[in-house]
Image (cartoon, rainbow, N blue to C red; front, side, top):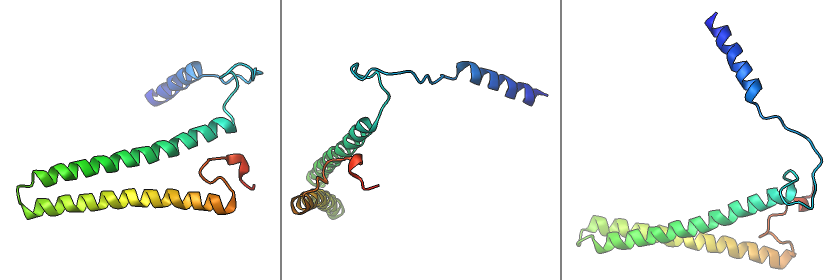
Length: 126
């Protein structure tokens, strides 16, 4: 009995407070009036990709800084020096891989003429 009452109450609350989608005509001259389309989706994915690359470079820079601090404060301890050396090695390899990936995309763009560094969903062949 309590379960059905609880389910009924939750259903009523759900129906009362559920936002209703209105499909009204929009004015494209007013910014933000129309629903999101392909342009907005492209912008979002492009920003996500660019922010991810920026965050990766920032994280690798912080990794190099912390490894340098660890190296300076090691006090001659071989285990700390080795740990700092490995952290610097992996950070430099990460920066190198990011740079190689970007250069590869630029080379593909130069040889094919296709702008692979820009996200464009309308250019997909389907």
